[in-house]
Image 1 (tube, rainbow, N blue to C red):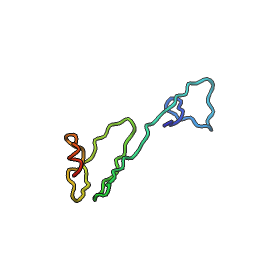
Image 2: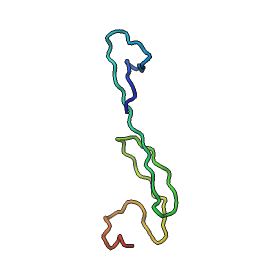
Image 3: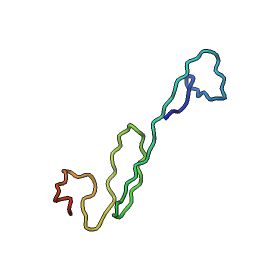
Image 4: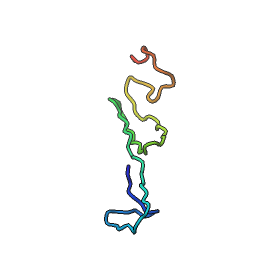
Length: 86
């Protein structure tokens, strides 16, 4: 996201007068977003994960439960069609 124009380390705004020929630099900051975890008819809650675009984050342990279902979270091995029917 565009953060503004700078003259060295000084931000330049519309109200500023630039002294003659200078080189202004554009500054950018990464997009921030929140990953929301959906309980999907289960029980429990998990805090959202605040992230910056382009940065890797480890996923937290799953805190959701659902009666009659087990093993929430990433599967260690791909599920077979018969395992999905549980």
